Structures are given as C-alpha cells and as structure tokens.
Length: 299
Length: 267
Image (cartoon, rainbow over all chains, first blue to last red; front, side):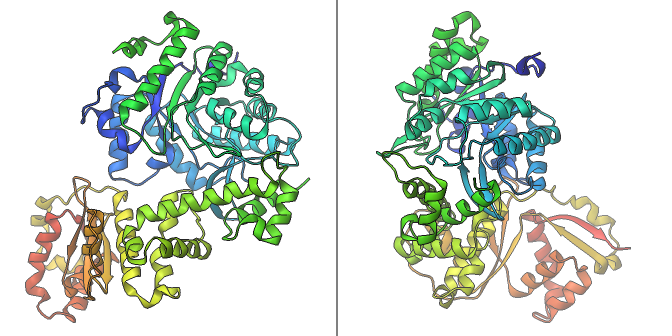
C-alpha cells in the first residue's frame, strides 16, 4: 500500500499560511471581501509560533482550529543537523501537533544550526549518501516520537556543495523512501534553486515519487540579479504556476498552500492567490475532483 | 569529502561572522573548499548570501523587539550594537524570539553601552513584556477561599503569582518611555528616577505594567521566591515599617490585577 493510502492522507484543497496580521479577517472579526472562511479549505500555521506556555498565541490557535482545518509546519526542527535531536523542541512540537490533531505535520530538509548556535535559516545539505542515511534515520525517530506522519520539504538554496554526489531530487526521493515519510513539494523553492544552480525544475517534478507528495507550497520570491531569493514577499510568478500545473498533472489532487511572509498584503490579496490556485487545480483535475468547498472561488 | 558535522560547524561560524566572507582569509579559503560557485556567483558570493541573511533576519528581529534602543542609539549605532551583541550572545534557542534574551545583560556589561543605564533598563523592560506575552496561563484566585484561612495561618501562607509577572527594578522610567515609543511617538530621553514596576499580562491578554513602592516590590519578590508571607513581610518592613498597615490594600490591588493565582498554607 502506498504512503498516502496507508496513512489516509486527504487532499484538503487550497489554503493559505495563517499569519498574525490576518487573524482578525480569518476569524471574521474584520471585514474581508474574499470571505476567507468560505473560500479557504484549510490553513497552515508555523508550529514554533505556538510552542509557548500560554497567552494570546494559544488562544489564536484555538480559534483557528475552531474555524479551519489546520496543518502545522515547522521551521526549526533542524532535521539535517549533526547535533542530537532537540528533545525539548520535539516535546513542544508534539504538544502543538496533539492540540491540532492534523493528518500530517511538516518541516524542511535542512539544518538550522551547529555547535549549539542557531542560525535560524534553512541551510542546505550536501546531496550525499551520508546525508541520506543521517536524515532518514532522524525522520524515523521524529515520526515515531510525534506519532503522526511527517512530510519533509525541499528548501531553496543559494549554494551548491562541491561534495554533492547526486541531484537534490534524487536525495529527497531516497530520504522519503528510507524514512517512510511524506514530501512537501515546494514549487517555488524548486524554481528558485533551479535558477540558482542551473537545473531544469521539470526534472525535479518528474523525479518525485507521486505517492509520497502530501502537500504543495506556492509562493513568490525576489530576483536579486545573480540569484533568486526565497522571500515569500510577492505573487506567485508565471513559471511557478506552470510548474504547479505540471506537478498537479503528475501527482493529482494534493493539498496546496499559498505562503506570504514578507511585505504581507491585505488578506484579500493572499486569498486571491488561493482562488487562482483553485482555478488551476480545477483546470488540471477537472471540477469533479476539486474539494466540495472549492465552489466558493466564484464568490 | 568533508564530514557533515565539520562542514556544518564551519558553515555556521562563517554565516554569522561580522566581516564579509571574501574579506576574511579563513572563510575565503573555506568557501572555495565547500561551494562550487557558478557563472554568476563565486563560492564566496554563495556563502555570503547566508551571512547577509543571518544579519538581516536577526537585526530585523532585534529591531522589532527593541525600538526604544534604536531610538536612543540611532539606526546606524543600533545595527553596530546588534552585530556586537550577536557575536557576544549568539542565538542558542530554536525560537528567534529568544535571540533577544541576553540584551539587557549585554548592555549592562559591554562598553560603551554600560555607561548609559537607560539602555539596559529599556532592554529589560522590552524583554519582560516579550516573556509576559506568552508566559503560562493560570486561573485567577478564588477569593472565596480567603475566608477559610485562619488569621494565625497567614504568616505561613505562600502566594503563587500568575506566571506572566516580571519584576523590574529600574534606574529610569523606561516603561513609560517604551509606551511612548510603541505609540509611534519620539519622546525625549527621560530623566533618571529609580522606579520599580511589575510587568504582566492581564486576563484579556493585554500587556500592562504597574509601578509599586519599594516595600511592596521587596515583598512581591520575596513571595515570588517562595518565602512565606510572615518572613517576606518582615524583610519588607525593614524598608517601610508601615507594611503591616498597607498590606491589605496591596493585596487588593494585586488580586484585582489578577497577579495572585493561588494561596497555599504551609502545614
């Protein structure tokens, strides 16, 4: 049985990353032309924002859970670090996951610090057999500890390692296989890294094991001239939409999320991107396969 | 091939160094060893992206947390101070929020900032509110239980406060300065004035502060350390002999503000 069937991973439709600036609109406390509750099928939250002891963050999380299907997405697990897994972090993460009860949770294929110092960045890993063995073993331990299927996300990178032995997509596919985990397929990150390292993003899409892709990310980036920077500060660009179409064609209906984290616009703008993603899904999958709430996109 | 642990250790060191990768012989050499570069970027350029992002991300976070310091120092000196702070107190926690946790201690000890106690006061006030924001929750005191406490048992009473309470002994009224700055004003530098405040989160999750007199402050701190009321009251009476007369009114204010969560009588 394949990964998604074994864990009954649903296609949640299209959502957005829930950010504090948009809470009032998402809760219906402030007017929003886009009617987010009717339009959005789900929202993603940054796990670390709720790994706290109390206060307003936890109240906001409860309200998100009351109003939306919520999936936790982390940025600090540091699954590729060579220091031991942070049990205090994992305990707090498990508390967030237990509160949300999601069908999966996710974080990045990266490391975020070394020698006790945190860099707070999604730092790339060399594409080596050593990395595959190291990361897949750690994912298995994390997945066992949290008790919910885990999805690992490809990151944008700006540096290629001399020691790499294979393309990134080969490493990601093998890690997912060895760890028996899902993949969070970030179309924008693939486009950004493709530009930065000179590979064809389509090759990445074509190499992914379809049954392991449980979620997709769409976002904007910034062109710095010599390289593209993954800023989540803009609309999704046309080539990334094309990549998304190709991914849908290959993976079928997969929960899709719009990320916007810098220069965050009004909620209606982000919801507008979600509506665009719904339209692309409908074109690629056919209206019959779209989730029930997708008809709200016409409003 | 470089071992993964060694590669990460070197990368992390270079990604947070103050000098550009290409300006530093060790990082320049390491970049050639680690990265491939490409037609548009040298190996140093590739590593430099991460170094730049480290400072942009952390200085941005510190700027958000300490607007009072940026106003007092000016933008340029604030950034320089942040770089020195990050070198002296590198981030240790997975939470970016915690990268601000040692700012008060740094400013109190490091030249030239230590000569201006207002800087450390501002940092300590800001950090107290950051901690109060997402500190643990606790139910308010059930006042009906007060009637069940025998009068002679109060000396043995241990007071449990709401986890958000933070006690600040300041040389300047940095909390008022902060309020003005957070309201978008550009207040002038306050005059020195010894001030004791309690920063806390109220029942509606709003961050608040209350100035307290020296004896009340001493009493609160002793109680928070777990001392029973009798012993804590005796220490506070050394500051103000009228503590006995005032304590009832203080308790009323503390209870109204939700500071007291539980009272336990030591048997």
